[in-house]
Length: 420
Image (cartoon, rainbow, N blue to C red; front, side, top):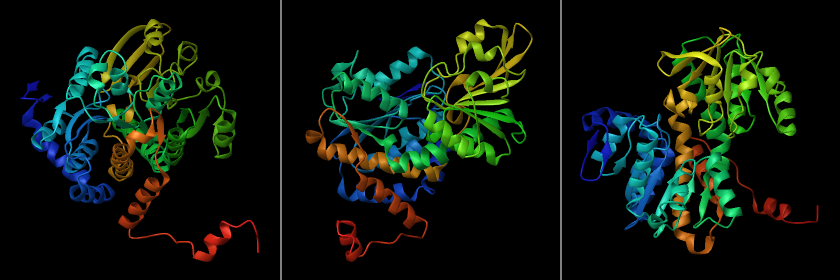
C-alpha cells in the first residue's frame, strides 16, 4: 500500500491504467461533460471541501473530477470493500484528488479509510449506503462541524437517513438522489439489470438460457434484473412481500410465489431487497444441488452466509469470486462475490451512459444543497423536479433528439377547471 502526503492507495504505478479507464467513461458521459463545463465557469464549490464515498471505479472517479472542476477540494473513499479499483485510485491521486481507498481492505481498514476521508472536515458529502452519515452522527461527530449537507445514492442509504430523520437525529439536509426519476427509472432498472448479469456471466461463464432465475424483490432494481434475465432466455420467478408488486410482476409475465417454493426451483438467485436474510437456512434446505446465489443489494446481509456455513461440511473458493459450500447432505451451493454487490464486486458496475445521468443528478444535487442548505432544514430532501427534468433534457440532446413543448393555449387549458 502506498501512503503519500495525503492519500492512501495500493500502488501509484497502476495510475496509467486508471487514466485509460477514466478517459473511456468520460467519452461516454456527455451529460456530465456538459455540467463540468458549467461548473468550470461558475465555480459553485470554490473554497469548499467535499468528501465522496461511492463505489470507487472509473465513473465515480469522473464525478469526483467534475466536482473538483467546480472549485472543490475533493477527498474520496470507497463504499464497498470489493468494488474499489486500485488503478483508478492511483489515477485520481495524480489528478489532484485525495484518495483513501484500496481493494478488499479488512473491516477495520475499511472503517479507518472512511474516517480518514472525513478528517478534512468537509463542507459537503456524497454518500452511498449511509456510512459517512453514520460516522458523522456517532463516533466522529467532531468531523461534522462544517457539514452543510449532502446527497445520498442508494435505497439502503435513504432508509437509514429517514430513520434518523424520524428520530430527530439527522444533523443536516441530505438529498435523496436515489428517489429521483432519472435515478430509479434508468440507473436502478437499466443499469442494475445489465450490470448484474454482466457480473454473473463474467464470473460463472455459464449459460442463462433455459435456467430458472429467482429474483428476490421487485422494486426498480428487481424489475431490471428480471427483464434482463428474460431477455437472456431464462424462466423467471419473482418473490415479494408487497402484494401490489407481486401483481405487477405477474402481469409483466413472471411467475410469483413465496421464497420457500421458489428456493426449490431456482438455478440462479439474485437478491435486490435492501433487507437482511431474504435467503436463509430454511431455503438452503430445499435448494437444488448447484444453485448459484448472488446479491445486488447494498450490504452483504441479504444472503445469510453464517447459516449457510453452519449447514456446510466444507467451503472453498472454486473460481475467482465464487465460493462453494458443500452441505452436509452432499449438495453444493455457490455464493458469488461473498454475497456483496455482484455487479460491482464481480464486475464494472453500471454502464457509463447510465451513470452519466445519475452522477449528473449527484453533481446538481450537491450544488442545490450548497445553495439552499440554510433553508432546507435537517431533513431528507427530494431532488427538485426541475433538476430531474434538466438531466433528462441534456440526455435527449446528447442523443440528438428532443420532446415537444406545450403551447400557451395548452398550458391555460391544463390550468383551467372549465373544460371549454
